[in-house]
Length: 154
Image (cartoon, rainbow, N blue to C red; front, side, top):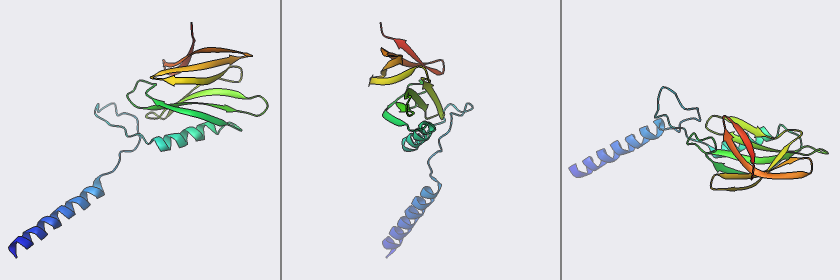
């Protein structure tokens, strides 16, 4: 009977510890890195990030978003999402948008006069076509100095 009492006590203590741990353990909210602590960890919710990206793109009328590519484009050691989308009726515009999920920032490439479409993404290399008029120009898109930059292929 003493062995049963010890077993019950251990089981009760273990159960209480599990319950207390589950009540206090929580996922850290998405936030920017804390400059006072180098060990701050950011947990990215990519499903929420895709919803944020859709909300950002939907500010334009009649938009269609294309493939998403997940990669650390910004170089902050956290995944970002880059996509292209088109919008408008009549005059259709093509834009590339980078969503820095960790810092909740959007960066775009393209406007009413010049459009950009992602052609491919392979191992950190993003190839796109630039449209200014009827002649597409193939090149590379990179994130430099907090903006998306298109460089024509040689």
